[in-house]
Each structure stands twice: as C-alpha cells, then as structure tokens.
Length: 377
Image (tube, rainbow, N blue to C red; front, side, top):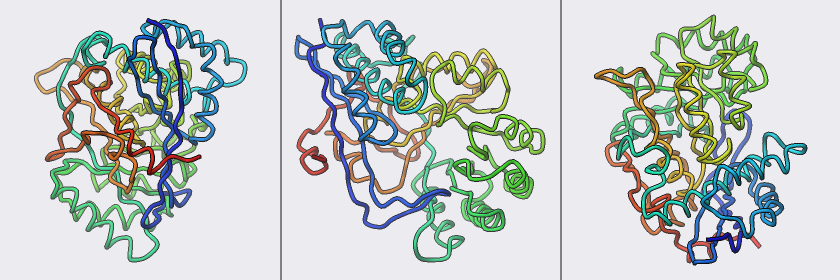
C-alpha cells in the first residue's frame, strides 16, 4: 500500500454574531483539512490547527516527499518530514501542517487493520470520556456577569460537570465574572478559567489570589507561553493548578515545559503539537514527570475524533488507584457551522459524556456534500 494523493481543503463559515476572547474578536470560523488517498482506495482525514490558508500551504509543500510512501510507517514518515523542514520550522505552522498529515495517516492505518486508532496506540483504555464545556466568551451586547452566568447554568442543565470561562479582560471584570459563574453553577461543578496569555505574571497573580475562593480547577494560559519564569512565579504564589501548552509543539518543546515544572497540566492540541504520533509520546512523557494531560481541542469533528482516539489510549492522570483521575475532552460550545456538518454522524455529548467513535481509524465518516457549502476557492 502506497500514498497516492494528498489534498487539502480550506473551509470557512460566517458566524451569526461575533464573540471575543481576551485578545481578539471572531466573526468567522475556518478549518484546514487534509485528505490522503492510498493506491488501494483507502482515504484518511486529518485537521490542522491554526490559520487554514497557511497550514494547508505547508501540507501541499510536504506532499511530494510523502507520495509513494507506505502510510503505515507513521513514525518514520513523521521523523523524515520533520527533519526535511527542521531548519525552517520546529514549531508553529510547520508542525500544525505535519499534525494534519499524521492524523490522516492514523485514520488510514486504523481503516487498514479495521480497528479504531486507539487500539493501535497501545489498546483502548475506555469507551467514553467526560467532556467539559468551553464557551463563556464575551459578546457585543449585554452585561457579562448576567449572560455568562446564564450560559454556564445552561451547560450544567445539559449535564456538563465542568465548564471553562474566558478571562483576561481586566482583573476586576474577571473577578466579577468568575464569582457570577461559580454562583450560577454551584459548588459541585468544576470551573476552569482561561486567559489566553493576556496577562503578565503580576496581574495573573493578583487575579489568581482573588479567585482562589471560587475553587478553580485550573488557570489556563495565564501568561505568555514564552515566559517560563512568569509561570513559575505564579505557580509559587497560588494554589490554583496552572495549565497550558496549546502554543507548544512536539516532544522537544514539551520537554522544556516538563523539566522546568512550569505547568501542572499539559494541554497539547492534537492538531497542532504533532498529531497522534507525537501527542501520544508527549502524554507518556507527562506521565513520567507526574504531570497531568488534557488535550486542547478547537476545531471540527475531525479534531474531536482525533482527540477522542488519543484520549481512548491514555492511561489515568494519576498513579493507579481505586479512584483514578481521568483526562477530560474539551468540547467547544461556541458557534461553529462547520464542526458537525462535515460528519455523517455528529459527535455530541449526552449528559456531559462523549462516546469514543468505535469505527475504524478515527471512527468517523465525512459528508463531502457539506464541503460545497463551506469550501473557499
């Protein structure tokens, strides 16, 4: 079996209303998908995190070195492709592109052997995972403490046992929003906050100390990813666990995070940090350092399926016991017209639980008709 063709698809959809995180407003959702075909007719799908125009251009540049290769040789192809562009991109768009390719190859591998990808990554450890609701962004109109509390209560009513609030809008506003959300969801629901690295260590420390009484499960990306000393200073100043890693790439980048002990929870994005091949290695490294692992997920149903296959293969987040802590799936609840539309069977939570697809490869089928609605020329 050989790789015959590699195609990329750039999809885009306008939102009904814009929303904001700490550093920008969104009025459009995009996706960069990778399609790989073998000479015996198998097709694998992957997704690249990041700017779709840029990541798919890099995929197209990588494609000639992959045509004619055996798609089952995922580790070898990953290393050869990485080495070919090592002088030009050890992080960022290059690795995001490689991630999409790698995920598509694992989709092919699972289809070739007729099993879910997680079965080939050491065996399935579970068939379902708890999801947490990512939402609680800012809107153009309304009082944030009112609409955020209402939105959070809605997620709890749907069955979610954990929600994540976007912060980074100023310490006082964040404090008010965090208190309002905690009151709305009650004491038994996990609450996380995410600043998208909008603060320096001084402001992040001030916020962390004030929201500690709200029982925060983790403080995500409190400071810029390059600022490891800032992470360490904040970690020493608060009891809230620190999370991050969506802006880091490959085992080599995460080695520095682990050795420095800058984070309590690693959050590689499977579609960014190197794909399934690399993220399984990063997860195993995290286990060796006693650091928890919860993948970042921000994409279409392809990204969801890839993250679920990885989660299916991961062991518990803590040492073996009768009550092990399991990793959670990040489930984006913001508007994304492309997310489920490209799947023939949508991936949806039921009472906060998401089933790991049991079909071969990623376990999903792509609805090509949806591409006509979202394809960008």
